[in-house]
Length: 229
Image: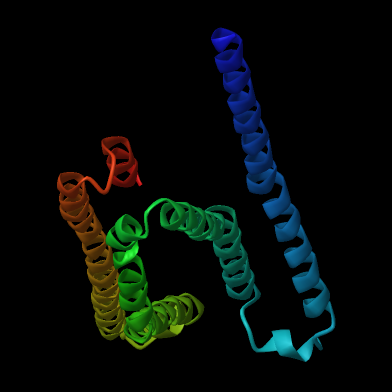
């Protein structure tokens, strides 16, 4: 009977794993790109309604590459980052409720760092946005400078302004590299600080669990479960 019980449990677990994998596969490789197709068709419909005079003063290749790059970024975001975010939030809530149902003291020892880390990340949003906006502006300045050089290359050579143009381009490239480094550094500092702060939960879990174990208020198996959580 025990063997049959464990076999049924293993079969049920395998079924749940297969079901979740199937749902994840569809959400990652079908639903996201169906939404991507809808987004691109909607964008094309919006562009179709814009007067032709709007495109007369703009470089069509640059406009097309910009829109395609933005759509690709949105595709990657909604296929990789957003699902992981919702999964992390949902799993944390479920695990938190289960832990509070088992032992509220250990649950507090494990989860008190989560709101602090979230507040640290959310509080740095304005700083990260400022560095990110500066980086985007510098990238746009480099792209505009390159496009201007391609369109006026004959005039630049005729007026012997190659060195001046290249110097201006080099300065903008340096500014773009510096802003990219500062943007990545700002994001890394705050995100890594939040991750390091989350690790304090392990220390409080060990200390609280050890005290409860000595006092007889917690079993060793429950203590291991909270450590895994």
